[in-house]
Length: 115
Image (cartoon, rainbow, N blue to C red; front, side, top):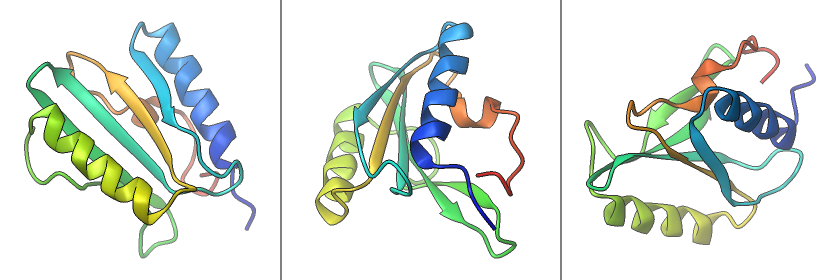
């Protein structure tokens, strides 16, 4: 089944974030078609987390926290991001600064089969 290209998904999420006045940007550009997708969310100067989009058993995508439960210091998250970028240079990293700690991709109205 064809899936939405990663770059198109990211551009859509960034436009939606902009319309909701959520600060978001591409921190690392990956493969346009199918790079792994990471979202670093900074809630405050001392609270951040790193999410990764993974393929679930049902064939749909889901978000998994790579930084564990709760929030961590942004420096810890940067170390995790760098480790993932070294493993997969074709990955995408989207940086979000939002006091509510929202994942901008959760806001998209796209079915899992499109992702």
